[in-house]
Structure formats: C-alpha cells, structure tokens
Length: 184
Image (cartoon, one colour):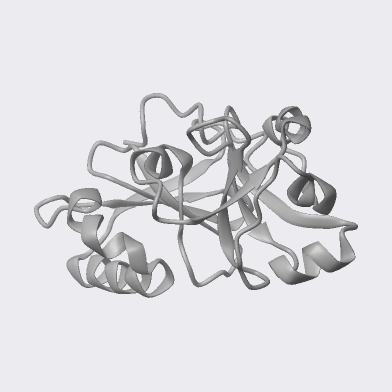
C-alpha cells in the first residue's frame, strides 16, 4: 500500500485537528484497540495539537504536533491503524501473528502473507476474527515486521491452509516508514 509513498509527492493537505475531533479520535481508538487506553495520553497528549494529513489514493494520516505520523486510515475505513514506529514503542496495541523464517524476506518486500507461512512449525497463530488488524511478527525477532489485515479467521487459516491469510498494509522500509522530517 505504501510502497510508492513519498512524503513530498503524496501529501495533498495538512490541517490541525480540532479538540472535538481529537476526542472523537481517542474514543474510536479505545473502541478499536482496547489495550491502547493505558498509553493514549502519552501518544496524544492533551496539550498537543495533532495534524490530519490527507494523501493521494484516499489515505489519511494522523501526525503529532512535530509532524511524525502515528496512525493511518485508508479508503473509507472507519478505524485508524497504528504505524510500525508506534507499534515498536507499544507492542501490546495489536494482536500478533508470527510468520516463519522463510516468509521474512517476502514480507519485507511488501508481499501478502500466505496461510502456509502462518501455520508452519516456526509460526504462531493467535486466535483472531476475519478482517481484524494484526501485527506481523517474525520467528526469532523482537519487533513487528508489518501490520496487516486478516483475510480469514485464524481457525479458517489452520483448516484451509491455502491462499492469502494476511494482507500487508504497512511494512518495514516502505514509503511511510522512511518519512524522515514529518509533515509540517
């Protein structure tokens, strides 16, 4: 999704969020990710004025006052998804799904994750429903490689064991990961 994202070319507008929008955002985040509630004031402090960054291809980003992106949303989705940098600070926000060592290079190139990569001996599959957001972890690694959207439930992945199990939304070293200066 962010393979060809460039901070100068892809951004169409940057606006500050109103206080009511920030409240609504916090409520939505605690509803979508219950574990984020304990650290939400650290991520979005009360005195901070977050920014809404609108990008091409109907992508929206939420950035802090310095312009560093924190969350993204695509198309007409209702929920914002935390970025990898935020997930590395607070790994408990998303439910983890672990791939085996053979899938790492494909995930780092932006490929979707196939069911055999999630059900092989080196992988660990956590119980999760279809269309939920997950952190893609790697066998033997501490931090997440990617953030993905489950295309089928974890029970279906174990039973069917064919096809795409997780659609990769954001991964290490994609265009969004390489944003250096933030959005001003």
